[in-house]
Image 1 (tube, one colour):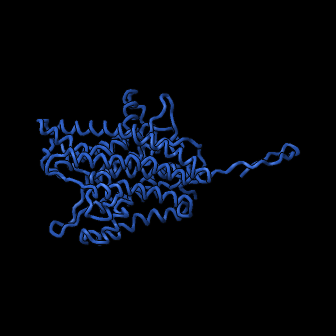
Image 2 (cartoon, helix red, strand yellow; image 1 turned 90 degrees about the horizontal axis):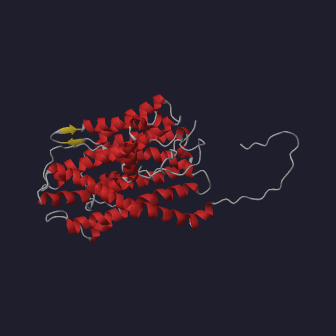
Image 3 (tube, one colour; image 1 turned 60 degrees about the vertical axis):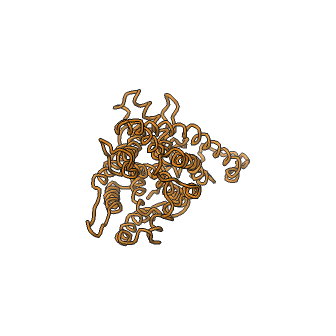
Length: 416
């Protein structure tokens, strides 16, 4: 039985960053996906759609909900779907790339460092940027974060201490991604990442959160138990399992019936973990959001197993989708707090609700592009060069000269 890392595949340059945001491929070339097939436009389409769902959710629903002085929107998308699907997508590519990094001595450490080098610098800069927008550009009456709040956000303390507020509510996914990278690297190097043990770990990640849900739902919000559960991201483990399962079935590492069973339980787990248990109104679930997660998993499975979707997209559309996918991480980091301030300031000069949403999207794309070009890509390159010069050199294995020995006859020398 194979595992998440042990099928031999061509060694190629990574084309996806930790959170799923793609790098721009060279014009006229077709890169390779971690799964071994040609780089598909399908993944870029999904990434762009998921990020757009995040922005629509924040701009049309969360913004007016949190800041009551922002006008209600004509169109409201009130379902938290995009961020959850981005975690599923991220898990897919984490599973697909971790073994490629471990192909040589020291490679897993370099893979792990590469994920952090892509994720963290942009996060730090975006956090400071969001803090500046709230501190100095937001209207009176809004959350005014202090320097201690900035430090707490840079250290990602929100889940561990409820007294610290978010400077940007989108960032709850970042520590979960960091934990996923660390866990994937550890599992790849040990017995947890292969065979029956891997499947037991996946099922445990589905069953354990389900068993503790009622206890958590009925506990006081600020309890130590709730802090531990939130800090470890137990309420989102099922999304990572769903993404890993898509990759495993697409590469023949998981039987179809087993894959279907995992996805059904993962989606049911999402319905449970996203539910609210109120003493007066009872149990409530956003079934539209649950259905959106299910459709997203189906779409990812189709992208992984089926033909590329580029045949249905014209050339101009392909270029736009690839470009947007390439800056999607920056857009994700930059759109929410910046967008809220932009919407509110535009409202002061008479801009209507629909145009406010449009300008929030445009502001997120513009700031996200700047964040990608000026921070994410150059600092990732610099940090990877530093790794190769300093820590990486200890992981290199230099070839040892071997004396040439004549081999008689027509026999061949093979290496297992």
